[in-house]
Image (cartoon, rainbow, N blue to C red; front, side):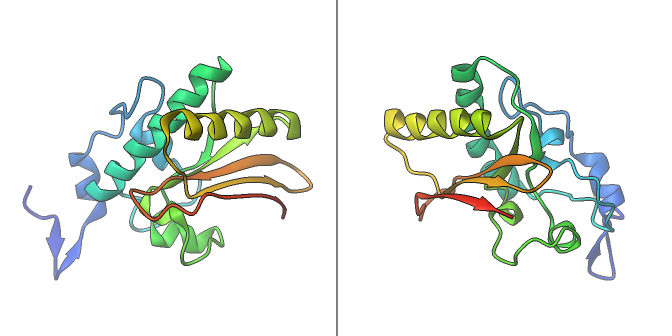
Length: 162
């Protein structure tokens, strides 16, 4: 694993060779899916071990939701490195930066509300809080921004037009 650091800077191209992004975080969610991005950055959206731990926690919720709705759940955005977050216009405090958030694609408001309902029921059944459950809609699409942290969850629920 020599050559990963040059002048104190990680070489992400080399580091990507040492992490298997096809690893399954849950039965239906892979690390690759949770780190996928259409934005090309010098860091290649490379997750740290702490990010992978957070993604594992998050995907347990998503896996349970998938089981309850009995359909495929598509992730638009999961982990974002600082470079990716900046490129997509994300806020500096985004839960995506730590692997604690995912944006879930929805076919419309009805599906978004069904997903939101099931996430709320999971919270109730597991007696665990989440950080954010935001139903978001633009002129072109609808999605749910869902975040769960290891601690300090705020249980923020909102509908936003962006």
